[in-house]
Length: 210
Image (tube, rainbow, N blue to C red; front, side, top):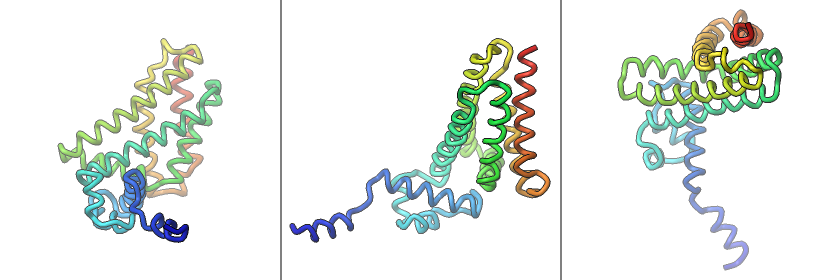
């Protein structure tokens, strides 16, 4: 086979399974954030990714399963962002930098926290969705709890700082601030979000130190 023939053959190869999944996840992120979970259609997700609807079902059992994997991926991205930001910092700097990192995420992707809130509301009404939502939120909460516990140990307050409570409060605060930012971005702006989250961190640390 000639070099030219090899190039033509390579260019027409079918994409690998991982490549297909990544393209579907990216297309799903765009479709879900633009139209919401309830209105999003698998056919439109497939079209965005450049595949047929059959490609979606070859990789995901349902729209619910596709969203659950996307939720897991995005949730871990947030946890990784916080971990990278506060790693090695003292309590004062960590509170401020952690608040700023989360505020950046909320403002950079304003529709994503709203989408998670929408899915959570749907999950509260639909037992089948509740299992996926509960699993992924517990996973994110657990990851944040682990991060907070590690920092608390480094700061010498492991015995007095309730990492689980802080992680739970943090997720609830992010959800609320994201909704408020979406309807009033001028008032609930990046600085307001960062300040609110910093105060949560700083207050928890201060209580643990006394």
